[in-house]
Image 1 (tube, rainbow, N blue to C red):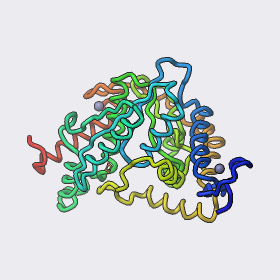
Image 2: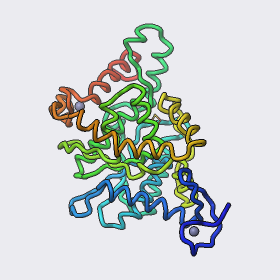
Image 3: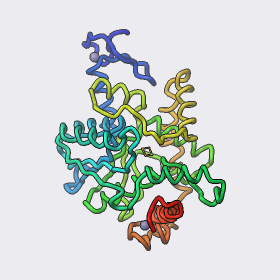
Image 4: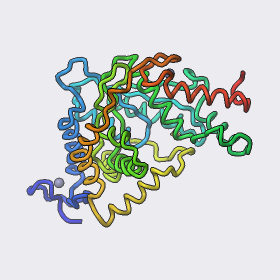
Length: 337
Ligand code: FES
Ligand code: ZN
Ligand code: ZN
């Protein structure tokens, strides 16, 4: 490895080369370089309003490397200027003690940083867990009958829906003004390309480091790690000794987005900077055009007829989906009538 190139006066040996620029950096300057890029994203894209005394940020924390690293960097970047708290959604995944261990690690980081830690147990609110959904999926996959009509989408999809709903629910209830998530550049580039393959212009127009539409009852979501590669996050977590759960969730499957991610990583290995250029150029050149074409104004904001949360439908997709899952679980005797 060559010498660190951060400052001319730094004579330390480099420990890493930045994937998209090939700049060689020593450990301390690498950590500072990543933190500076996160701060730049926060400032350039107005992710956090430092002038608003009521600004209150909720970090959605899962115990994994992305959200643990996000909380670590955000805590450092905000320096107590804005209220920062963390929420762990307990979805009930028991194989390999996944949920139990994740919660312990998430809580431990919060205690170390002095960030208030909250936990919301899905079973207490909803009456079933992701383990129950997995059991339902096993029965549905085994049985040939009504397979199509059962419409089972997979554990990860339901898990994402439950987490998004309860994070927003908690944020509304406790007057948070922003929800921060650990999505990184590699996630975003993969999602963008997947949406392009299906020409989902509406989803593409929503991509960005912050959700822009201001709707009461839907707390804006911010992505401070939007311009940080996943490989950089792995290295940051390693050098900064950010504790996180190293194991994957048992139910994680190779979704189409994961296959796109693997292909993009391959392309990046011989065309460095591809993902960064794609996401940056999309934000700069294509998104403004899409935003002009797609106007969400025709969508009328309503209150869900069942749960009362903000939605564009008569009943929100969370209630529609969980009602259907409950019915199916009763049929298979996973839930009692
Ligand atoms: Fe939610 Fe794996 S973490 S299904
Ligand atoms: Zn250095
Ligand atoms: Zn609802």
